Image (cartoon, rainbow, N blue to C red):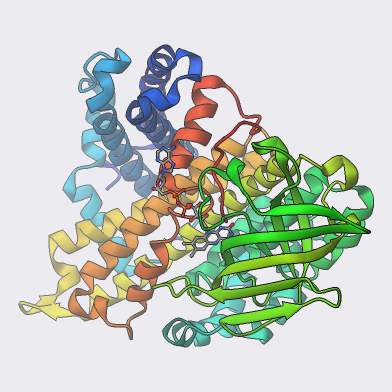
Amino acid sequence: MASLCAARAERRAIADATGAIVERAIAGARALCDGGRAIDDHQVAVERVACAATWARVIAALADAPDELGEIAGCAAAELASELVHRLAPVAPVLGLAPLDDHGAVGRAIAAGVAPAAVERIGEAAIAVGGRIAWPLPDTLAEIRGHARAFAERAIAPHAARIHQSDELVPEPVIAEMARLGYFGLSIPARYGGHELGHLAMILTTEELSRVSLAAGGSLITRPEILSKALLAGGSDAQKQAWLPRLATGEIMAAISVTEPDTGSDVAAVACRAEPAPGGWRISGRKAWCTFAGRADVIALLARTGGDGARGLSLFIVDKPRFFGHEFSAVQPAGGTLSGRADRTPGYRGMHSFGLAFDRWFVPADQLVGGPAGVGRGFALQMAGFAAGRLQTGGRAAGLAQAAVEDTARYVAQRSQFGRPIGDWGLTRYQLGRMMHRTVAARAITYAAAAAMDADERAAAPLAAMAKLFACDAAVEVTQQGQLLHGGWGYAEDFAISRYVADAQVLPIFEGTRPILALKVIGRALLGGDVQLDGRGQPGGP
Ligand SMILES: Cc1cc2nc3c(=O)[nH]c(=O)nc-3n(C[C@H](O)[C@H](O)[C@H](O)COP(=O)(O)OP(=O)(O)OC[C@H]3O[C@@H](n4cnc5c(N)ncnc54)[C@H](O)[C@@H]3O)c2cc1C
């Protein structure tokens, strides 16, 4: 395989070559879009460039992958390079790009990496190791990953199928043990009661939890991540002291409420209102898709306190009682009401996503994030939270893809057709090999984004969006391929692969749909250099 797959130097050469193509594409898109001001006039070209830039960033991350993964990383990089060229081809003329199909030596490395024999061998190796991917880590991180895996397999895996099939809420003992293990405070600073282990530790934990259940595992960490990042970005000292330790210990569980029935991607158009009242604010309006809103103790809620646009929005921490069913309603002593009803979904079960109706629901003044100075800052604070949420979702997607690879590697080894295990057939091995290297690529970009977030969260926000975009695509593709390799049994609820497929579908929708991430986060950052996240139309929804 070594002779067929790119060695580290060849991976680096592919990364350099694709990086150069993307630089030219970005320059062409900048010229086309008046320095980023006219993105909406050229959406297709910008989406292609944003995806190509994302693919190039994944290839760069693969070039730095550990040597133990060199062969898989090489095949992944080669295939992504080939896809990148194809993605840009339709818009090459408007971007002023020369023909993209002749890369000399790099082209030969790409061709070697995508050669069927190379990918088939990865599939063969995947069957031999049950789909496990041994990504080497420093001791502390390896220990964190090992603990998370053991916990997930012992405490969550036995419930995962039942929760999905009966649309149950994640069991309280799971939340309690995750809290005891410190999983809700992995990236909260130690001075606020967290573990301050950094984003990579958070991602590794998330991957292992998501590998056994997307909703009843890895997604529980998303909400405290988002709210704690918003508090760190704009909360007053008193608010940080009051809320972060309680989030870190799991004493309070949070939900995030941005989306409304008529407002999704255009977050700046949020209509739910907060009116001043004696001692605080009264919230009135409808929200949609608020995941975990029943069980949560608080809802981080974006509401309008001023005029139109992003600057009229503020972020509140809204208390509410816990509810464990699919519907609830509550009345405050002063008459405020809140009701919720969960929308039925094909996957992502275990937390339940609610439509909410607030009517004069009271929130004390000190629960407006940032205090009086936080009025009108809600949009920016919410976006600070979303960057962390998107990174975390890269980990969720990588964990889900990993689960699909493992189940499929085991299945094709034991299922026989035409007198042989289906894993002996070349096409099966090739397809499994692609699942394996796509999953490695999802990890590579997510780990790179985690390291970048550790260094500078604000600067790394577009990279976190790239990790989310790519890893979610990978999870959709890998789970579907895994389902196909299970044949009819892949469609049976008793086989976990059918749950993985249903769960993966939601990943490119929330926290900013895939097109909105490409156009308004990645595209905008690439073309305008504007990562201030204070304009209209930023993507929303965890
Ligand atoms: C299971 C689930 C859980 C969720 N959990 C939460 C949660 O906890 N909290 C929360 O606040 N939200 C949550 N969401 C909501 C989610 O974030 C939104 O669904 C998402 O942001 C998209 O909004 P929308 O559904 O209104 O779609 P729309 O914004 O109406 O978009 C519809 C389509 O149009 C495209 N589109 C929109 N505008 C443009 C444009 N300018 N140019 C080109 N294309 C465009 C979009 O990409 C999309 O494909 C959840 C959603 C789901 C399904």
